[in-house]
Amino acid sequence: MEFVQLEVHPIKYSSISTCFTTLLREQGPSAFWRGWAGKFFGYGVQGACRFGLYEYFKKVYSNLLVDQNKSVVFFASSASAEVIANVALCPFEAIKVRVQAQPHFAKGLTDGFPRIYASEGIHGLYRGLIPLLGRNLPFSIVMFSTFEHTVNFLYRNIIQKRKEECSRAQQLGVTCFAGYAAGSIGSIISNPADNIVASLNNKKASSLKLAVKKIGFLNLFTRSLPIRIMLVGPVVTLQWLFYDTIKIFSGLPTSGHVTKDIEEDKMAESHSR
Image (cartoon, rainbow, N blue to C red; front, side, top):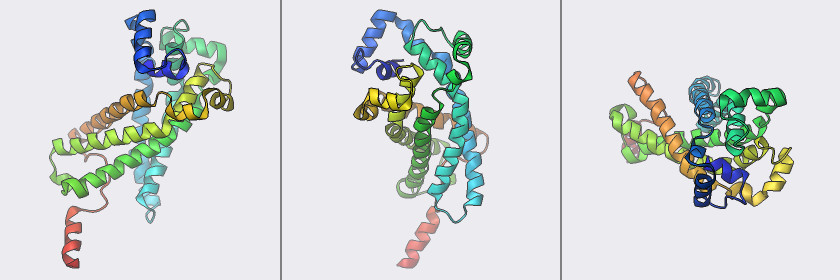
């Protein structure tokens, strides 16, 4: 809740602490739960599409782009999955932002959805799709690529064991570390577009150009960034942990591509000597 308010009302809420105390005084504790349904269901749908379709597209592009660098496969897979995930997310995001920033607009999904649709049609629900893609596509591409390369680095250089030789706890530990790094770096990349999405959905600006002009170029990168890193890093970590826990108990390996087995590296080193 504080995150949206900082983006939409930066003059009134100049810091995280000011935002928290002002909301508590003016609107009570319920203000911090407003819009939870849109966020819960919206990001649930997005997460299912993002992670599930990423795995699917990674297999597809790995077969198609055999001779390409693995980063190209990661980029293409995450971008393809994220486009579909954002089409599913956009209506929930529009309602969530409107409910949180305009307390008297609606109580949640049940009354917010028909109100937006009745007054603005399908355009109202997908008003923020382009900037949402502008936010989430870079985030997803950087997030998945960072995760994959971090997992590869940890197994090859820190743990120095094959993934299959590690315990479940060790594998999930790698997932959590890589997930936090991926979420934090992705937040920095996607912060400008996130500010634009909030501005458009709350009608603070009628177009992308006006939103950028009104927010200010420097503020696009700095506004609400600390709280975004604080929130997104742990959330992405939990998403990866939840996803990989399901995979482990389903008999599947945890996520992340390791370029070479440790044994191959050791054999190569011994031959070079």
